[in-house]
Length: 467
Image 1 (tube, one colour):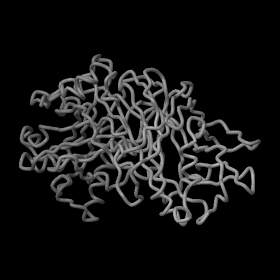
Image 2 (cartoon, one colour):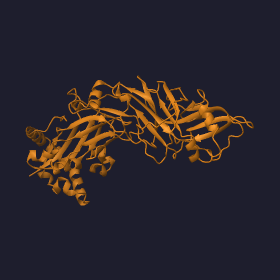
Image 3 (cartoon, rainbow, N blue to C red):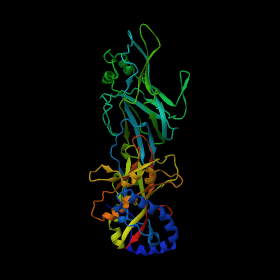
């Protein structure tokens, strides 16, 4: 594994000292609040021995230093399958991204009876079956038409089970939709003379009446309760064909009262009848994602993420939601930092900065990133002590004005320096927060961007040296 950074060297110490002397007064002012924070933490008994060894020097005697040349190993890799059952948004559609290639999203969902014990009457005849789904947002280009497919699930879903993003639950191959959809997440929808909130409707009976007739032929026992009905009709898998240009991922509100399947029918006694099947907060639903093995992603993306050329992390790094991509980070020399300087180190502030590599595009940046520690168990993570101080302190929110993210890692860095090389270094992982319910992605500059004019991925330290 290749170390990718402008590494710390002893020769840099003298340069930093000269810079520090020039800006001593300014840095002293900057350090008043961090030092007060350390004092407060000590008073609150929040492991003061782990922050600067419990030694708080007089501000006038502090030797103050700044560096952003700490050695970093960083590269991007595929994310594991993520849990997607009962998400805040269900996702549907396909999107082509020149960096990440084509991604498709679909969902599985159960339905609930609107009333128990419904009777379709004598000799019920199908008029139509319509699936209506409410929007809650989108990601991408909504001008591209999408081909939507709807299949009947052939294996029962369970609300209290865990479902993951790459689980392809079996379904019958009959497509009941074959429908061209243009995502319209902000346009009111007009149906039957009524104007409702943004939604789309797909007639599921035009290609084949089988699904509608199956519902009409449900027995009295099948319609006795939602649980019985879900054993009989197990639900739908709704997905999209992959696109090679444009496209969008629609965010859907399945538990909304507007999301439903309506069967229109008649019987020997009455005409123009209807019955509703609802998607509710207590019916099983989960998202399914397919990145098409990144076949049409950019070459440098494929080389780093798929072919494990970690050296490419020095120029660019990636994160992608929908079980896409995460970035691994390690600071290999932090354990030897104090020994290299020959003094004790008090970390007053440590910030990890992810700088966007692209100008603003139609591919919006994730609103929030997550940063966690790795563990001895691959795929398992641990919350960082800095995050326990609160999100406002910890950071990770996108700053559009500077096209960057910042995380405050003061406690993590101080602990790594104090522990030296005695503790295993499992590194850090960064990924999109809420990745099961949004479609955002981001490209960052690496630690050695392609141009000297670009701001690199870096760890910034303000620290003091104590004899």
